Length: 463
Image (tube, rainbow, N blue to C red; front, top):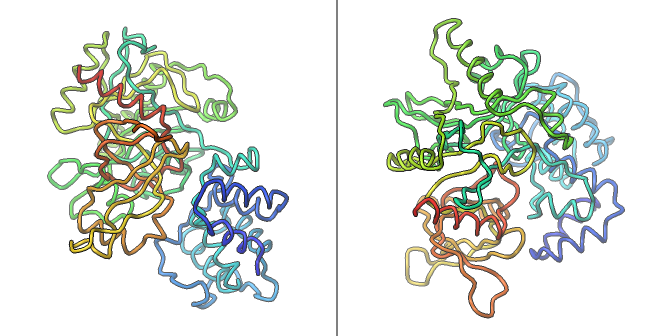
């Protein structure tokens, strides 16, 4: 049996975090396992530009060798050789588009069953072991490189470190985060977790932009000009199947030079204040819109300069009354960094949290959910918040029920009213948690501390 494949099976003998950590420690000297884990979950050092999820490949042993690069010999194929091929031909982008698809089919065809399933797990960036980057790195220190991402703090009226004078309040777009890297007219798009995506129309526009990193959010604009809510719009974006007349719109809020972005990845403090980065972004976007006079699906997020907390809250209140999420408040001198920034804060009334799906509770006997999922069990990665979420529609119920194994271990967003700790429990519970959406763009959950801060923010916004 393929040793890495057998370890994956061993990891899944028990869904408990302690069991999984013990298994990894037992195999801590297995260099091939480390290589597989890194090539799967390290989305900084390894990007492949392809995803099997959009292809009709239901069984790795079915198909014909079709690529023009020549066939792989099954007699020569083992896992180590397959990893060499993934690195040389896909990670280094020797094959792209249809050529990559055909070469990938050939690779799977040449692999035995166990090797093929490991390869598919790498390409899909999920070995189905229900483990995140942080726990893997506890065993293999520094193995999985974390993508650069500047996260917002949460608004706290009495503790905010933002200087209100000349600060920025920006609409919190009700969409999905994307980051576009432009270098020598080549465009690469990644999610916050490092997943690669391809949006040809947006890439064409951005290829004319100057080199740098462009940070923003995708939303779906319907034919009547309205914007889809996040859960529905993100579904359209993920499937790339839009309603007639709809467009994907990129709303940008930051521009970082290649050098300063690299410095952030290496924990070197940035030097360019936000007001200069934002002014540069506006100039770049305006220049490319005005150059040919054609409407673009790339724009700068709605932004207002304010001079007090009250002004920032007033804009957020207005947006929320319009049914939008809220706003992001930013210090004019905010520096780009990797990690949570105290110089930008999320302002919104509703409380939500990102948690990991850990199991399923069966539906009540005698109801329409008998024999199906009644609620979804969840926990935070620090194991300090646990519970069961409901609130999904019948359509979602049928979908989740048909792919339990696939969604087990995924991150989902839930909304809730409060967070409490019952007497005798060593964990906290969310009050009335309701399912919002699956988050395939995230790899880590919120912590208890973050959720408590979210509750405090909502109380401040409502006061």
